[in-house]
Length: 65
Image 1: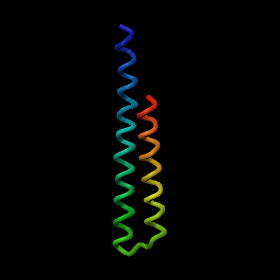
Image 2: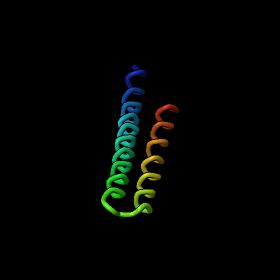
Image 3: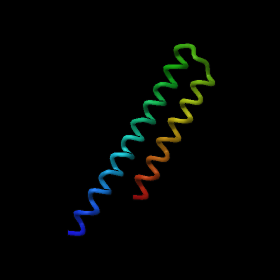
Image 4: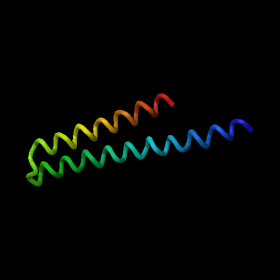
């Protein structure tokens, strides 16, 4: 019975981690789109760094859990 309790919590955090990876990829895509649309390299760099940070944190948390 105790094994069932742990899987619900673990599953919820896994959804958060996958959502973080999707959000990070979205930020990277927005950074590339901003660069191609003429938004400038600073805006693209902010979006790119933010996206990479979110992806890295999500992967680290996924490995730790």
